[in-house]
Image (cartoon, rainbow, N blue to C red; front, top):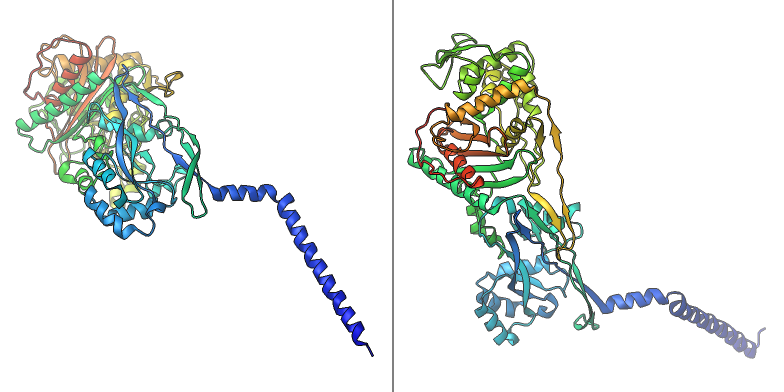
Length: 620
């Protein structure tokens, strides 16, 4: 039997052992925390004590080829809210702030909810506020806790809406963009390029973010700035465009549309023009009408303004019609049909066509008409081009069909139709060169409509039917005819330089070599020259001192007035530039578009010229 004293000793021993083990555990834990895990916990403590806030960099500047500033930055006064400082006072502060700013409370709340993920990062509520608003907020600062005034660098456009479709517009990053890999290092509220050069070269224009390290207390309120690393401005871009040429191109385009309306084409309300260097693909001007003011997006565009810019009644001013829209090219495509026919021996320089105004080779049930209803009589291939005789090209298209070949389509692809040109702008249309495979796929639910018919080839030969090209593709293809040896890649950026201009890098773009018989090119060029001297554009270029080669085009569009085209290059004997002008529902190519091209060439070559305001249509 155990005695009481022994029980007491046993319990004391057990208690002592437990105490010793507990002490050792605590001691070892302290040793671990203070020695082994010291670095880790110091880092965690610092992370709790220090907040890092990124700061946006000023975007790079954009110049024309002569260093005229097209886009710059200017200081803008913005109203911001720091979520942490506002916490618990939203219902008191936001209604008053909304009234001062002329905004809706729900809009401000949505902004804070969406972009206020970092409680210490100020959220921009409104940009470009007036001095009166700034004065009021500062005077009543006690009534607006968390509300601050900041100076931001925002985009400024010295030429307002000039070259808007080239430059593009900017805006706050969207949720969709944030979820993409391209914008993985961006955060809510940051400004990015949405269209045009601003979008295509956003990665260069953006610059490098700065960082501000702030020490905060236990509840997260800032105490002091520990480190302020300045942001590095983005790269500057020098474009290929010439401001003077761009101004003339936009003016000539607008005047052409107005003239078309005066001539009775009341639906003419849109169009485009492009000027291209035939040898290196540099774009001197790119105009699209209607246009818009990119400055509208700097302050943050309203719902009503955005709706208006995307309404059919406004003719979709945000669309760059040179690059992002495709059309039937009409007779401007005929030179490429001629090249295909001559190269594939479907026609020769001595071959004579006879045009009575009506063509029935496919059968009397399916007659095709020439635009000249009385006929052109006997014509060769050069005269077929200069007078735009449809019968000549019906014949060539039909010959290709009877061979059961798709050589005409192959030649179209050879000149770049049906594929993007590679221009440094986003969302380029690839156009369409219809063939048997395309038609079978397009009408996959209607077997009867899948058959490639003679009429499909014949329509393709005159630039009609299902053929679609962009005005830029047409300009590039005419460049190949003009230079005779290559298809240039059109581009808008000439060089890139650092923000302090210490480093400049010129951009080189590739060319695609072409192999076309010199005799074939000679015939086609002769036809294009005669279009201007004695053919369908003779009235538009009457008395013009510069030798120009070109082609008129009138494209039929179901349910609409004809679309008017003119494509040309100059000087004829030593080509330097291609000009393409297109007017939607503008009538005939030998009238308004040709006059617009003449005005553009007048500026480019420094010619003193009295341009006729209105010319009589010669033909299609």
